[in-house]
Image (cartoon, rainbow, N blue to C red):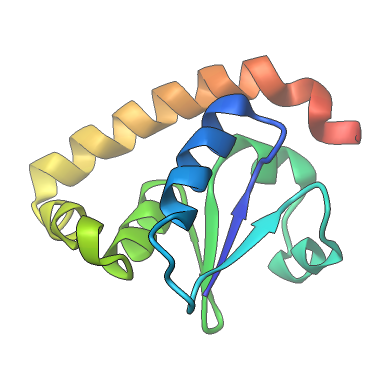
Length: 114
């Protein structure tokens, strides 16, 4: 599984550094600014800066769905993935994520052309 994240976003970087400490060997962490493998996602840099992307096998998950897949692979976070199976919690998480990611995008959009 590959997790594509924005290393230049201080909030994103802090969260990913926390997840990396879980030492899950099946997760490959990919900085969207440093890797040419992002081209395989068939998306643009703007979308990669805007939302978290996770590729598990051939399927790409975006946003809250990406977090759900990521959390399901991490022992300490599996309960969060299961919580997202509850429709109302999923919807609330979806809208909260979209709001937060929008403001992080506004803060970090200057990195798109880097």
